[in-house]
Structures are given as structure tokens and as C-alpha cells.
Length: 142
Ligand SMILES: [Zn+2]
Image (tube, rainbow, N blue to C red; front, side, top):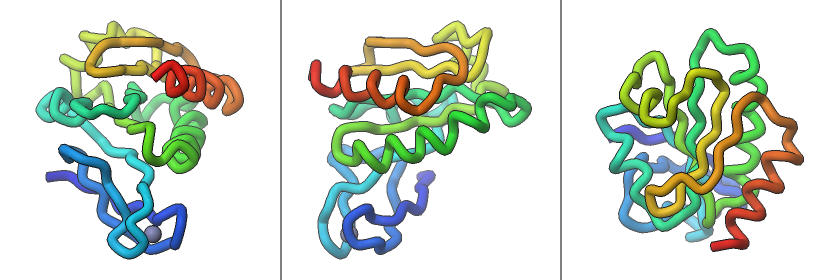
């Protein structure tokens, strides 16, 4: 199963964060909540977005310049909202079914999911404060 290595925001220890987990990833050392930022493909997308957290799907591609501007913002948001947000990156070139499902004809495209249902969609590279306030609003709506 795919896993990303993520430093703990509380103590800095590097942890392996699984793409799929029934619970919440926590730090092996201090048990704090870890940022959850993972890659998914058509094969495991359904499993990866099956979480009680707010899910932010990043539909991107390696050739997409604006996608590269959004990537570090999403890493920051995953860090700042550890415990309530899961960021799922999908390379549309390798995942045609997921790309089609969200009609990702223009990327970067960010799709927010709550319990598998789309609750918001943002198309195009937006500045950090726009993305941050969207995440804050959706999390507070619960
Ligand atoms: Zn820790």
C-alpha cells in the first residue's frame, strides 16, 4: 500500500502516513495528528477518499504549470489542518476514470468531498488565502 513520509507538526519526527486507513494517522512518538496528503489513482481512489475527514482532491498533471503553484499550498493546508483534512493528489494522465468522473477538462481542479459527495469545486490556480478560507468554511460546516 502506498505511503507518504510526513514530518509530525508537533515534534518533527518523520512518520509514514498510509494512503488508506480506517482511523486517523497519528505520530508514532507524540501521538499528535499528522497531515494527511497522499496520492491516489483510479485503482484505489474510492478507498482513499473513504474517510470521515473533509477530502480535498487535487486533479493535476506533470505538464501543468499552475498545478505546480498549487502543490505547495496544499502541503501547507494539509499541515495546518492536520486532523480534519485529507489531501488526495490524482495525476489525471494516469487516472482517466477519476478525471472523467469530475469532468476535469481544465486543471488544476480542486474537488472537496464530504462522505464521498462533492461539496465544492475550485477550478484554476487560486491564491493561498482563497483556498484556506474555502477549507475553513467547509470544515466549520462539518
Ligand atoms: Zn509527533
